[in-house]
Amino acid sequence: MNTIVLKFGGSSVADNDKLKVVADKIIKLKEANYDVVVVVSAQGKSTDHLLEEAYMLSPNPSNRELDVLLSTGEQVSISKLSILLNELGYKAVSLTGWQAGIYTNNTNQDAIIEHIDSSRITNELSHGKIVIIAGFQGINETLDITTLGRGGSDTTAVSVAAALNAKCCYIYSDVEGVFTTDPRKFPEAVKLKELSYDEMLDISNEGAKVLHNRCVELGKKFNIPIMAKSTFNEDEGTIVNNKIEVQKVKSLVKNDELVLVQMKNNNTNIIDIYKMLISNQIMPIEYIDNIYEIRILLKAGDYRKLEYISGSVFKDYHITSKKISRISIIGYGITNDTNVLGSTINLLEAEDTKIQKIDINNGKIRLTFNTIVGNDVLERIHKELIK
Image (tube, rainbow, N blue to C red; front, side, top):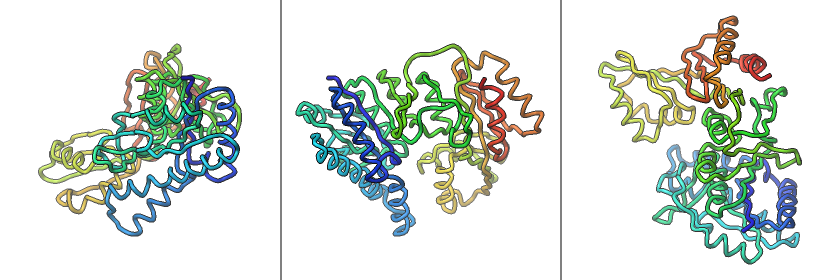
């Protein structure tokens, strides 16, 4: 089959006018004799609105019912896009996650796709239809709806591409590709034409929101090229594949959504804390064990979970916290070039910027600060390293 998979994010399908832009792109590829499968997210910020409404009803809603509620956002998108394409004269069919045969584990809000029964998809394609699939959702062994977490539609798209042995998976958004740093904050950011899976995975894991990390892992595992492009222009995007270039700084990511938590009591034990956190689905990024004190680094979302349970699960602990920043320098082989770290350290030292920790790991250098640092720090490092 000459199959390609397209994924459109929430900003791309936010209203009817934008749906028409999406439909035009789909039609062009259909007329180029491709079998087209489309994965879409919920429109705009509708997932956030659904969450807000749920928490207005209950401070602790059932995870199962949250998944049932959140899955409706994508169903609105697939039905509207299918209605539009059929009106334009192109046969299209919308499929929910369970109709598309997407089976997951039993975890709510962060489910993992275990396998895809692609028979319904291939059958619809064989009848000449454009298949439109709800991203972000699947079904578990008890036939309950599950959702895949933030960025889950990217994962749906690459998983479907792998199941169909597609030629490529296109990820469309309101950004033109992957840049050397956040182009919304820094106009001087340069778009990258090509990245390896490992480089893109590092960029995603460090907090950049261009591609979801799980979708990149799947792309690497099944060797599915991923093209990140803009929905709203025809500019060349960024291709993510298995090609590795010579050592070079590719991208810098600044993550301000980190919280350093200090936990104390007279019997502080890292294993006990670990068990309590994991049982409440909180996964620390790092542990630092000191006498009578444990410091853990959490994503902001996990810290909100910790706040909710701290009065009961950790009632015997004195807990303090503060937000911090981390800047990650990413590129294959850069840890073999002492100039990269050396020039960065010299720059920060001259400005008296306090670094709490430096991690060096193959294609990535991470600088963890002891407070939130301004975007001007990232801008100066970017100017120093991106030539």
